Image 1 (cartoon, rainbow, N blue to C red):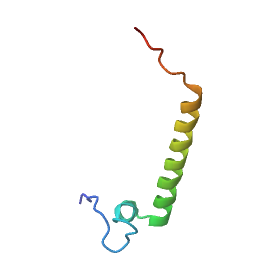
Image 2 (cartoon, helix red, strand yellow; image 1 turned 180 degrees about the vertical axis):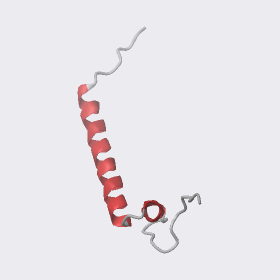
Image 3 (tube, helix red, strand yellow; image 1 turned 30 degrees about the vertical axis):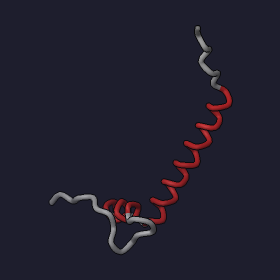
Length: 61
């Protein structure tokens, strides 16, 4: 039997996306939320670092 990925109706914090992923993989939704949050924070800081070290494109006439 093939399972489908759905948003959770009972384990929802905002819209049930992390709860649905947790139910699909049979893990705690809190773990999924922590992973998503950590991924967001890491990507944000990578973006901030790249913003500081990447030079702007020179203007051409």
